[in-house]
Image (tube, rainbow over all chains, first blue to last red; front, side):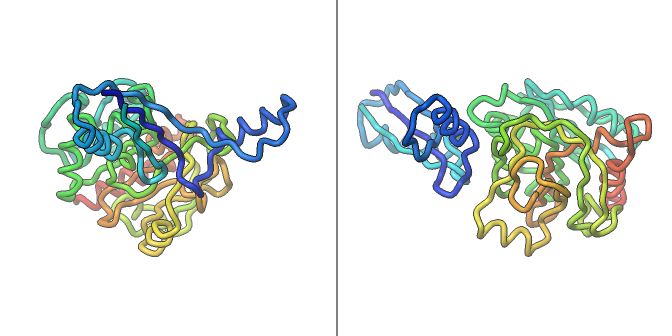
Length: 79
Length: 220
């Protein structure tokens, strides 16, 4: 089973890298970009085949290591 | 005062810290590798600056979960003074021993210069040899020193005197220009500036020395 984890900065947390991306896009002539937020994407190959258990495990992984919940949110997709 | 310096793969200020500790305390510190699960009893534990684990995932994230940190956390919770500088501060926030998080500098630039710090709390075991509000000169060298905490946490730490040092100017986007933070019990301090690099005039100044002598005095 594959788990896809998206880690994004929480609302209200300043994202200087996202801001730089937004400005760079503007400089390249891409008008109309009203915001950019940079995050992380992590793919995990899991031995677990039970989706409920897999989600529980990945949830624990996010809390313990993959995301810093002081500043980041995470979302999990299983396949 | 017997001290230990924790060494992670990618630490690069561990020897500066060891030299400062030996010069000031007169006792050579024990260097403890990140893979150790236990080490001798010490009065003081220092987490040095550097780029441990190549800053993979987030600065300090891997180190905070390393074998040796389980023991460091246990001792910190038991009251042993733990001091993290730069990457060491990032490690301490990642363990949860200190509140908040350290993010990429707001201007996205690596900042490397001497800066003026204000002593915000001269009543802690790490700062008693300074005076309240004193301006001291200490170097910074970091890319990820932008201190963030939610409003509730900021109110709490500022009300409880947990802000130990602040920058006299905005150098990295840190909220309230916070440069160093104490835990609630006051036995854990993390700061981005490097006091271990300012311990004698030959290094450009000695304003960092009082931090170490404060701890020595507190320990008796």
